[in-house]
Length: 297
Picture 1 (tube, rainbow, N blue to C red):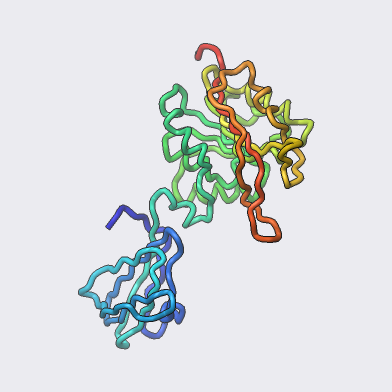
Picture 2: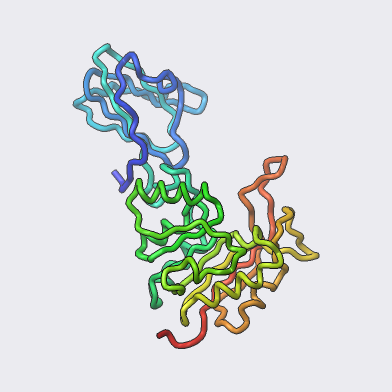
């Protein structure tokens, strides 16, 4: 069996309590494996096609051991006697554990891509500005960074802290309104090595964006990295959602002209939010990776 991690364990069932949904045609979600174990008695496990026609079946009892069902495979199970006692666990790839167990979206692709660079440069303290419930924070903490997660939502930070407690993560978090531009007051020691902020700037008050960026730069140690991903708008490609703090093309880059810009591009991307037709809204997104100049002390 491949390296999988259990994210949900169902209660033990008997022939009487085995849910009816499992006795009918069903399948697991994308990226989810199911492992069925019979402890006593027996059941019939039937593979089905998409139309519900039987492809094969077999009897599963305690001697058969755990039965692993691949994602998306149509099947059903039926008790064969009243002595049945069985259990079920759901598993996933370890990289998707928080997504499956706690409903977090996956870490941003640019954060995942930046990890090798972060591991190769000095400094392990990381600020996740606008962390939400922690999708990026937990990913970075898992890879050894000392993360401070800040978000203005009480509910988001409460959920982050719940996950932190449940899973044993080590990181710091605070409810913080980014518009304040006073990071030194909430970061331990008033400075940090690196800062990420993914798809957050558009929610800022428009007239506070310059102060917020200046503040981020001020609390970053020399040699530190910034990763910012944010939608942008222009006459040629207007952002379809009316955000208060949407930046213009090139505006983010211009705020970093005195830094070493390692990457800057503006490319077409999608929001999670969908329009009334069920299609994801599209916009141009700016991605900036920049290093603060100067000698690290």
